[in-house]
Length: 372
Image (cartoon, rainbow, N blue to C red):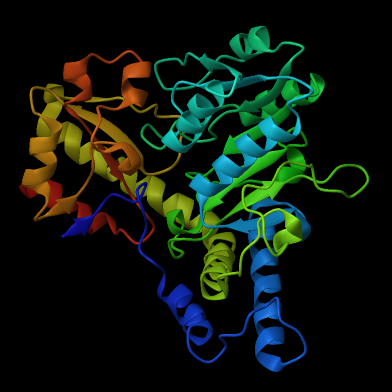
């Protein structure tokens, strides 16, 4: 079976597994403990992993806060900003195509008296900068816009969005789950990005570990927010709880490998995508339609309609041979809100599948589509 659902999760890299194993068995110390070697070794391992992720995204090491993944990071940042700055304003701006962990958090905050604006998107799922600008008000405290869409692969113009937020003195958060480790990111070039979320398992690391980037101010102090988890004060008091050292080490190794191989991986995935699109066009012709943009997108994410075929039936029939999906793994029981937001009819939504490649895929593996 050929695995092509890498936007949902990725295969753990063998080198990541090997890096993790000692911290599951021999090096099991708690990095919050002191003096003895098991604790110190764990502390060093966490420090190195933090540096590896910071290097991948272009931040300072101390701006990385480890979490259980992007869902927690998104919740922590959005709720934390809303609570801490409630006396400054109660307006949040997001989009109609965010991940459920952003949308559901915003809906929850609406029940607590916050006003949320949900921006429309274009045919590829991107917001218009002028539309965002028109929605910013005096009481706007946070803008949260996805960096790369998990269903379409479309990239928002994060540079322009971050500059607009900086000009208006509004915090800007981006859910970067689908782009970290897949495209080049250097947050030193995006001073308007205050917060960012990511998950290890999207770039060949383990599940259950991710991070929040929280930018420091001119006084070298992290942007303040209310913690989601209170307790022992780990992670600079922002995210309490005993650190999952083995998972953190895995994230760090995955980040290290992504940094090292990123240009080659991007080239390889783009070539595989072009090859697969060619096969699909030749085999299915006018029976298919691509929802994804060809430009400004995450390499390897393909959203395609198989006209007249129910996507659930298609995915099930393909399952013995190829693993693809109908959309986001986090909302698999519902028709895609992303595809609806870009203007697709319910029939078009229900005929769409997502194919997502990785650097583990060889072009010749994709020849399986010629036989299907």
